[in-house]
Length: 231
Image (cartoon, rainbow, N blue to C red; front, side, top):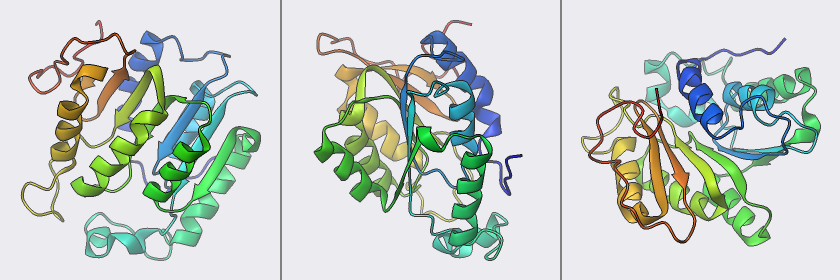
């Protein structure tokens, strides 16, 4: 049985089900490629392995430094992280165990390093692009915009880029104006001619368009929770 000590993901499952259904990737046996930038204990990774990257030919690449609760400093105590239960070693072992429980070792590649170094490695490798990239790493907007810009070339045309914590308001550990939303909005402005916003709620989901796409995205102005999805 998979094991987790935190749940920062389950409230997003309904959105993910709608999004992946809309692109035909939910429950499919197609060979799909996914990338997680920040994976922690693997809760979202396990969901992807069970519902999207299901076929033997699918691949999920997971980037994390697995530094554990220590990297959050005082914020870790605010959010109830335990320095022993959620130490880097313990979190990584839990991730490895969860992947093994799902018998998914052959579908998962771990990249234990800082996100920018890992993304640079993937860009240089010039491998197959990803159908979906999920960014849930540093909440510092400077780190986040770097992760987003470096992830974008790795997303295939028609693929998805998912940002966590777009509407996160409990930014008690950040200075004013330093929420993830600021970085994500900047990304939307920079790449507005290359994407369509599908969901704008707690998470933000965009679809990468081909080179002929020139329609401006509705992202900044849209207030609805599912901007580009039918109900």
